[in-house]
Image (cartoon, rainbow, N blue to C red; front, side):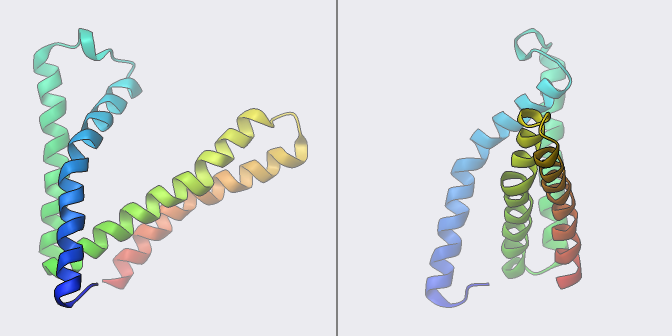
Length: 137
């Protein structure tokens, strides 16, 4: 956590960044959810599009409210940063390279097992991050 005047300035900068970044990120999240279910956004009825949008916003709001009820507001920002950094970091550092390695190097037995190990490690790390966060607070 950051304390004092400089810490407060840093927190305000992070919050402004998140407020400006999250709407663009939300559009990508909604599009990814629809792509997961093989749904084309342009042919989706307005009612379903609205339900998906409001449901996603509700899920994000519920998580934020739960974080506020768990701890004081000074710790909540650090929890969010720890979780997002730990999960996204493991995906970009281990899971995605392992999956790409499996796809591209499938015929090379040695590299296939190394890619599989990297992918497995990357799949386990997000759960360990969440578990570690729960234990630390």
